[in-house]
Length: 243
View 1 (tube, rainbow, N blue to C red):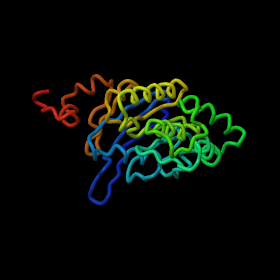
View 2 (cartoon, rainbow, N blue to C red):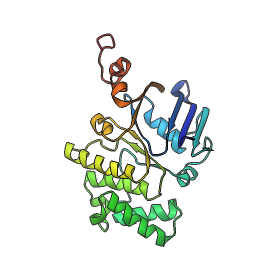
View 3 (tube, rainbow, N blue to C red):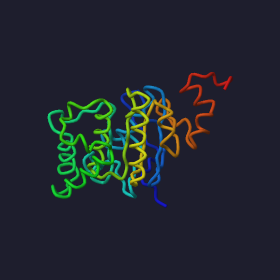
View 4 (cartoon, helix red, strand yellow):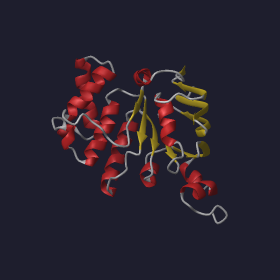
């Protein structure tokens, strides 16, 4: 079966610094992949390569059977790639509902009638239906994180990229957000999630991918990857010989 997303030998350099080094990766439709790595490992660069914010120097990126290596970001979005950002930046003066409607109509090219119904469904899924008419700038941190998810879902993505969305939340808020992410998965959306809150990540993913200095370090079942001495040394600071 053709994977939903495939990266084949993707590399990216900034001058002499190689931030993504021959990374190959596949994601099946309906799968949830977690990405771990220390700060500066190249995780966000990998997302920017997938969404089109950066173009690779080498390699090929395919989505849903189509070569998107040189495709513009807006075109990738319309094919079904959505992204949340680490720091939510909604249109603060607009209502929660209006934030979604703008994305659905202008980003997702939905008719206003279609968008209205879809946005209400997304608000229900993300736990924001009772905040629909509230100004986005008045939301709590957890609510802004939920809105970040909702804005991405308004474009009806097949693949959703989550960038450290659990950061800064309390344990209870984190668990609530994980519940929302599971609901998104249940609706058939595939996920790639970068996260430092490891227990949150592990509760919602099928497979784990670890990157360091732009290179793939380990990949596979989460428990097996976390038990890898190389991962424990790089990510957890545990001496590899001791591990």
